[in-house]
Image 1 (cartoon, rainbow, N blue to C red):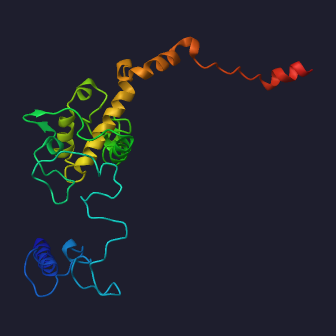
Image 2: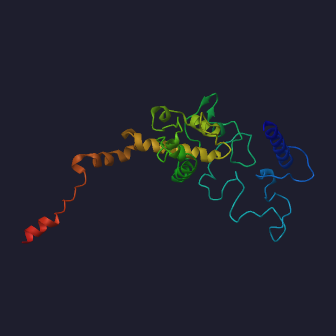
Image 3: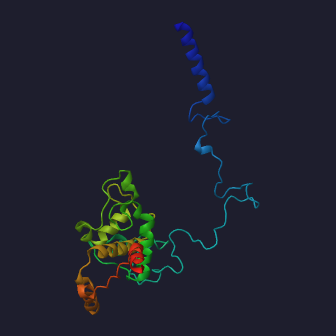
Length: 252
């Protein structure tokens, strides 16, 4: 009985090896595969002919209105910003290429503070868009660290409204976005330099929205704000509507 079992086992093993072959072994024909290998999947290869398209080319012309990743977008709100750059500049013009504050977040050996781009409504709108795309999944829509990933057990997500992050230098936040930190991945190859600063501007706006002080309001607008904040200037509440039962009783 045991002898027959051993013979059958050896036979099944030999047949299995013969059918599947050894991974990496050179063959003239493709080995039989129960699960297709990804390196032999059907796909269109760049700069190769293809019978799938009518012109016989695998490479397709760019979609109208698109540009290569990294180039300035026409009409970009920060395209014409007067930003000083050092002599080292990227041919793409958008991703980190220099050693100045704009590209590193450092002033000498220290983290710098302040945005090297004019803070405009367009910059904040751009920052909100990029924050929503790249950051809100973890940090949440308002930067409180309660994004969707926190619901699935991801720990250590920064809450930007904590003192630690409100007091953190802008350049250090830029460096964190660029190179990542702890469980946060690096975005230096995914988010352009200008968009990283736009995100920082939007983060600062979120922090101001939750932790603002009267000193942060321009002096020419403080009087109007203080006037609206007084109890006697609060908008009056509308009188509660009478119930249908009361109205019926009064009608009778």
